[in-house]
Image: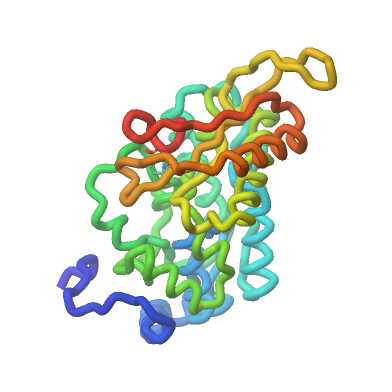
Length: 327
Ligand code: XMP
């Protein structure tokens, strides 16, 4: 039987008990597969790779080597959380790589969206390969493949998933414990493994990260505006009970400036665009009808707390015609 086909008899994992049974089963399967060999995992902090990491830590402990690459395009607090949860709380063997300068230098002056994606994806594989080569005797590669990845037929954009297999390193085999699960099941398993809610239930975040929300050629200054305004937006959504209700919400800082006035003085600064959408399959999307008071509150906070922003806009464009991301 094709191990990439979900058997019809497989029950959907909807309860902690079912999740625990799945975890026990996978722990035994992983132990049988890898024996005393070591396993490498690129741990982004996203739901899928985090659940795989937590599962493998339970199964093989320090035989798992997690590599977290900070490419400088992560959201505020994300790299810190990965280190805290996996190294401090779960005692994982975690290698943290600060590749911020390396990625931003490579991206400097590159404005074309697909070119940016390609650079981020390729550089990610390169950094990961370099680390893998430094580690002796790693026989297996673990991946957070989930069932929709297997079923997916035509990605909307090129290089949709950052990561992928390092091309010129030979591994004895792949460890993909959640490859037959749907996203909601992965979350139930993650919760049962003790991962924090904001990791398990987090909204989708594209592989190229904030890089596609800092439109055109990325600059460190505008990237910080995206990161800080996004943190405020997420904070306000959480405080107002919208976290987990709205499918995806984020800010964009376009490559343009406009004239404004601050403290009676003319300024020439960037706008921040807020986007909040709902969708079932990401092929079409509708705009979340945000409450005006909340919009004004978020606007006031961004204008007061993020230096270098003089306007805030709400993107009311459905998909089509706009994609969810701006690039
Ligand atoms: P769009 O912008 O095409 O996005 O309407 C649909 C969904 O896909 C996410 N997205 C990406 N995810 N790598 C990813 O892993 C990418 O390059 C990428 N581009 C878009 C987007 O956030 C949305 O959830």
